[in-house]
Length: 95
Image (cartoon, rainbow, N blue to C red; front, side, top):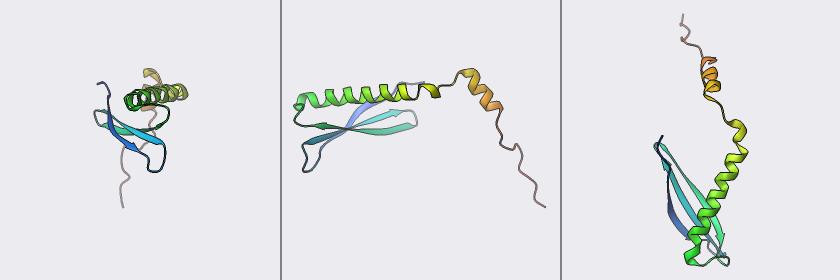
């Protein structure tokens, strides 16, 4: 499996607010999605914004991994699931 490619897709100032939204584009093969990260302008200067957003993105995925840890299946579990398929193997014949 290939690695994820993560890049900054855009940086936008929120109109009328002291906030910047840094959006990351995440891609791997056919999978592609964006994650917006909002940061307060008063907390960071321009050179620190992307670093702070990367840190927030990292923390977000660490928390997501922790919360979904119980979902992980072993190779044996996946094989058992694939053999349990309840889908009909043939379509019923029309009369």
